[in-house]
Image (cartoon, rainbow, N blue to C red; front, top):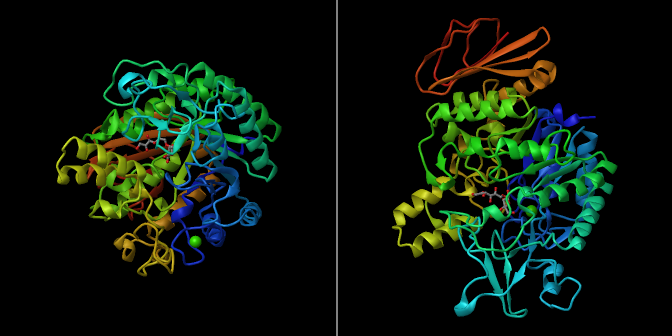
Length: 533
Ligand code: ISL
Ligand code: CA
């Protein structure tokens, strides 16, 4: 029944995974050609970032047709073949469901410009104030204001993300009926469920102005409101007809909000992506960076492990910089890469791995704004320029936080284009592909890739790693240790998040270490991870 409690889920960002026809853009036939790689890793499901028709202002998170495949990625036949080929390998497909907004190219939006059409109320339209004032004082996620004037309708529409991502109006029941049909369309094709984009902000209670905040003014009018819960319950009724799975991407959730969204008795979502552990190195939003302090990170992970019986566990996705330079160490690239994989695969919950994580891919090596594609980075750069922030500072902020850090092409081998494409890649390949690539790591029993495969197998063998309870043992400035227990079976995990050796007084038979050793003597080497029995 709850297959997702046993599975590892692997996220594919299709544009950057594998190109099959030399146009420099990853595609569905490319994914099919790499399914064996995922089977070897032992993944139970793929979360596919959007492959629908889209003008790509936000790489597919701006959908213009939910029932068509972006021609850059292939055809509907390719998609059906992907579902079938994955199924043959025991791998399920989870689609990305982006229903907070559509592209302004969607015909709903185009028709919505006409106040007399049946689509007139599909979006949030509003009049501005006198003197060109916007309808309210809210600010959006991508660093801009969130209203755009439409000359045809002579009104503003709301967009919490990019200008061409118009927010859908769920006060109109027809919109939810459309979404239900879209769910059925894909479930009938055999997908196993959905990753639901920014799903906790669907319902806006009113369009009134809010108290001004440093960022995201207006949040109180849409963050995890009862209207959203009601929508989720209605969607669940459809999903239940197919026994489908959902994970919600839920921005700014607290543990209480998360329980209300995915508690088993709630019948809404199965689990959520929370963000607090990803925010340990920032103040409120990612543009205000602060030093990463492992203890803050550990305490946060512990809190979430305790407060929810089950949840999604992740360290990377397509919106976040890579985990090794962020939570690990460039100097101890291999050791810390392996250590982070132990964390990702031994906490309680469903692990989500992001493409490239399994070979220790790093942030991009771009040096100029021009090399970036991310709409968010471009918007923020414009805002910073408006505030006369000097160029060097702008670049330092953006290069550390840009979502393109995780979006460079997958490094299959050490050739110039990393085996991703024969053409010109849509986003630059990292030059470190000579040192970091799958082909090299496949032939190396000591590689990050080999380690991931081995750990994934261990997780399949040991029920305790999947179903066991979690008990924290230590969360210090260097060491994070915890126990997983199921009946008689007990495993202790101890992780040294530092460049120095650290004491860790745990005993037991050594099950795994990312250093060559036969037994554990109570001292962890730099970035050492041990699993003891
Ligand atoms: O990445 C973020 C900030 O840098 C987040 O605020 C992100 O925008 C937020 O998590 C929502 O993300 C999702 O919806 C966006 C899309 O751009 C992201 O790629 C997607 O994961 C709008 O659809
Ligand atoms: Ca292609």
